[in-house]
Length: 477
Ligand code: G6P
Image 1: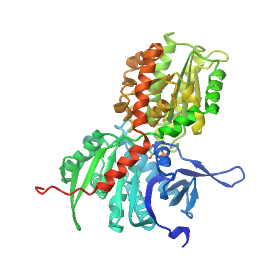
Image 2 (image 1 turned 180 degrees about the vertical axis):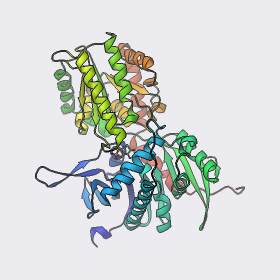
Image 3 (image 1 turned 45 degrees about the horizontal axis):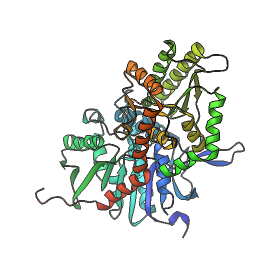
Image 4 (image 1 turned 90 degrees about the vertical axis):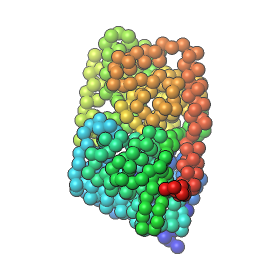
């Protein structure tokens, strides 16, 4: 049997494979880890399971043959340049992404984009139908693939289908704007189990199903009467997490500790090193963070070289208009802050428009006294959990936006509303000035939460819920 015909009992579908195809300096193909929380989390779930991962390679063109990388069987799905524009940049990231993130920027609707979204979802479903063994478990991820559950069920009624949304699910008032809202609900209710980051997201979905499509809901379930009888689809909140054990071990390694010292030294050993780590996305509140930081400098509350800020901004979706604007704006602001407040040899902001490997990130987290996580809306924010995981010394302070999924679990962090610049400034100052004892108390509590709710337990709970589905409707339904 060729690799292309092999089938698997456990299959993941995500828009991206966990690696992107890039060209090396001599034109050779190289595989680089994809950015973003989804890949980071699923990477560790997938290791040790003999499963397959179906996804896009990040480049335009034919799918190419399945291949193995990092101990996983990877099955590429091909997207044409036009589909990248309409399905990925268009419908996924310029229609759904803004609607699902409180319309921080306006959403754009194009019927042509929707057609591409349908077509690509169909292609994923067909690929999954080929790769999944009889009775397999298929775990579909995120907003790019919301039609896949129903499309796959039609092709392969024997498989068990779960879907997890890594981003928020919007309130019905916003979701209702989508001209294709019924189709999306119909697509999702093809699954046996739907997982969301927060209970509130699951309720938003259930409410949308009830109010917009007239489906009957009961407690945390939707009741779907289809051609093959009645099905019950459960929706619940299941916050994703990090691989605590592995990342903690990495952060404790002598190499990472040494690198953390080097980072501080190279900045002139500031008394307070602050850090921001985000994909360069308008949901992350980088503008608000820089505004607060700039005002604290202007007021003389903080000043380099005593205080420094590293801002890592991982390049993202650079052909989408809103992201181009954001990049210009952020880079302009960083330039202004540095022009006004840097001194010879001490920059107010070290701006790094790059991505870094895990060890370098762990060193930065170790080095940072104050971690700034200020999203305007974020499904979870794994950076916050990564920071906590890397602080085995139980030092450091996490300044965390209330509008992240993580805020619900990490209630011992320095919580704030990023729209309230005065409040954000006060919170940053508190995070700097609180006693080491108080910071230690908070960090110990935060680490306990992340240690006890790691990505492995998240995946186990998801799979147990999927295993338990479909629930039987009560007799009185
Ligand atoms: C978020 C989404 C993922 C996405 C990642 C990176 O984490 O939930 O689905 O893969 O951002 O974005 P990109 O558009 O580069 O895949």
